[in-house]
Length: 431
Image 1 (cartoon, rainbow, N blue to C red):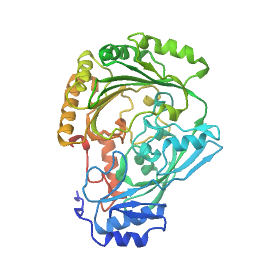
Image 2 (image 1 turned 180 degrees about the vertical axis):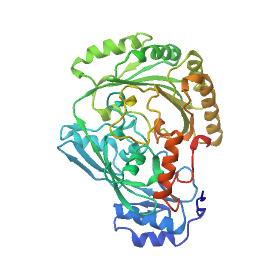
Image 3 (image 1 turned 30 degrees about the horizontal axis):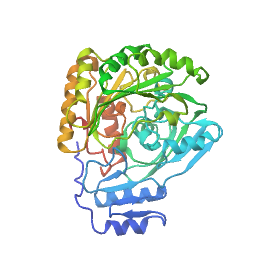
């Protein structure tokens, strides 16, 4: 096997000048290494020069660009095109957030199937999997994609669809940043109309009771319902306990939904407040994009030992957030167009996020190791993942060996210079 070229640790002094001469008038090079692109041709220029000079290249954004101290960063925020077709699909530039697409689609009576956060870029969600608040009802956001346009590591701008470049179409949806820099995404939309959801919050003293009630309550939920439980240890003050809920059924029966589905949970302990109301899918995508680094696990249930470990993980001295998310439903169905996202059969996802310092990262990983031991056989052989921020989502962090080999073969072809973030990094379980 041919080893990857050694990338330059220091950017060549003539690289910024060469970049500026090749970029469009609206593009910029800032701080010497950040390329704020304005059109797809700017991405092509940046990737080709990175390959020629032997430097790494990454997309600037949450969860990206954490591995190399010196590299080019492509900032796609000015790729802000939003085109919505009345026939039920949209085209967006790589800088567009879900909330921007939702606003434009709503004017035509349509709405997107979002990722977990309305503030997340559509392109980041697509390449990172895309488990949103309505995923149990409609599946992954990446499963709604019609086409992805991206610049691969060889500097070619490609339009990737199931008919054209089918292997890249499989890989880019969930395969992360190692296959190319996305410039645009086309995806199918849903009919608009309010969904129902929000969150309930309890006092820290109720954490055990709420967690136990959530464990008993979630197996009773139909596929139209999605939920996650958050335990938060802030820098000061007591731990927070929050349950988020999303309902994709008929909102005219909102009171019945609240009483019938949320009633058993709310009766466990009196919530401090409740923000359950009709809202669109983007309004349900409220997950914060934490600045920290974390670990994740994919169990099928929460046994008693694991429940105790979940509480211990957020009761230590270090600030930390733990999210326990219900999967299942449409996530476990075979999609019409397969993608690189693995472990769709998992019933739950655990995401443990701590601060970014070396000691904090080590402590978070140690807490995750304790969780993995407590879950034991309930992980069904799915390996933990470590060293990740907001993207990719939990299902895309630990590809199966066959998917990993397939992605590596794709990356070797699409990125011959091995410059793209993730192309030479391998499995992040060892971070």
